Image 1: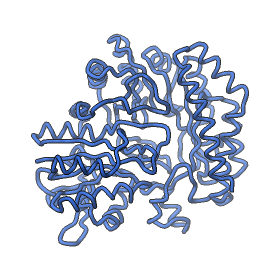
Image 2: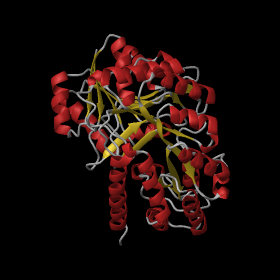
Image 3: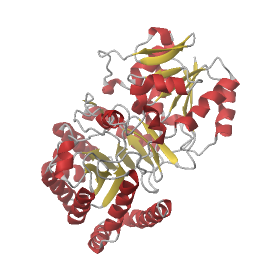
Image 4: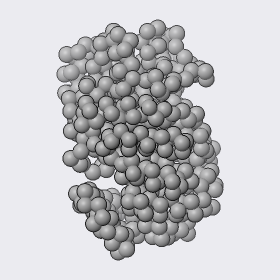
Length: 474
């Protein structure tokens, strides 16, 4: 079988992250299509002829994509899409069907799996929508066809059939092959936050998150992980075969299992891999022993989802952290020379101008290396989405409008327009804070290798602030 995997073109000139835990338009990062690369390896192991187009990474338009599709002549075309870029991404299906109506089109999008019928109804050229683990469902789909597979939505003589995933289906992450990086012409286009001279990639060491945040699309999903040995094997491959010097562990919560994290760090030190890395985790899953071990193993940055500087809001959205833990975690990271990026969500249930000010004060008191202020987005499948629909604040078809930088749903006390203004106010409070700038200058003096990154980040701050001022000047 000839199978083509496609990461669609950029959206309005902006890069798009199309990965399960992150399906967003991203102005400042270009990431490898890791899940498609891994799926390519799985399908090749099953004996299929596989081709991959990363139109997003290499900034190809649809004309260039279709030239390659026509040349390869696939039997099946598999692609990822996101809620915000839905119509743009679905254009691919129509073009492929116009080329050859017999090609089976298969879509992947974690965020919209709870709205499978809406997705299929909105995209006539989409034949199948994967609802379960793609590593399990896609190989079965290719082998047996849609009518004999669980975890899929598909068309059957004009009707839309939805078959839920089998709860017993599970994949051992250690059994998955290393992604097919050889299908990429180069790793040069890829970077996170700001371009660097180091070859870069993302990588998963675990999947899922057992916590209960009401706004998160992966909340209360089973956490499963790779062994330290499996992680090191892939890192060694990336270093030796592709010269990778920087990795972003793209797990939702990298440090859930402290002993596993310590084992990975120990192996990285002993193996002298000389790879710098970033990760995401929770403030209450860091302690001094762990942070020191991570720093000595090459960790250069940790992203923490703090979400709000109001403990009342954190409790209301079931975040499960204490602001004391957050302050301690930020201080631990800075003390050990690790950059700490804190993300916050403006517009969670209960948000008022007063709680926005609490968040701003928390940031000014703790002074993380960097911040990201998003607005609350009621993604399908989340408790936040169900609440917004019940209150009549959102129609289920509004998922095309979901963009983390633009509010579409207000709170009891703030309108979407006010939430957008609050986001700009929060950024301005940090970006005009002299102590924050001095702390970052000291960090660069202690870590000269970060000078280029600091300069590029400063330019990014200026551009970001100007863009948002222009967007909301009226």
